[in-house]
Image (cartoon, rainbow, N blue to C red):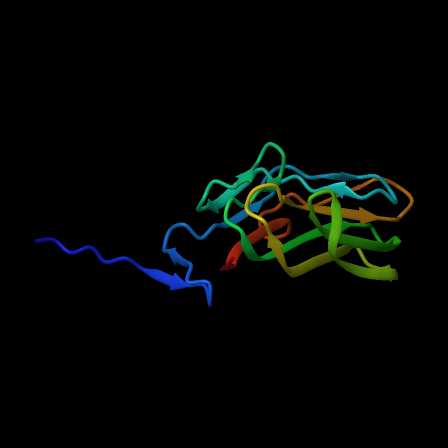
Length: 163
């Protein structure tokens, strides 16, 4: 007789159990692709490399995460925008579907050679039609680009609790 061991996590009062391996998680970054940011225009950040994508829910060609398990997801993103000493206000925004959901920013008047931006949030996704993506914006008066480096421009997420 053989016995199989299954790792399982209870998701609460509904009785739903997530079996280890079907809890989506992803980590992507920009290894060689920078995103061009026109001034005062929110632009989707492009990601070209996966560290991991446990449930194949991240599409590199569109830079969009489409979770197939309904529940609450922790998502985090970061980028750096070289602004060359300009006085600039810069934003990074988590989009759910086609609208801004949560935003991180560096305030107006910051003068530095680089603006580092981060945003973290928990977002509910229905597991069928919701999508998550990351946008950035800068207002220096001229076009700038995000840094293409894995440690500077990245996007990660994982399922915290299924519903």
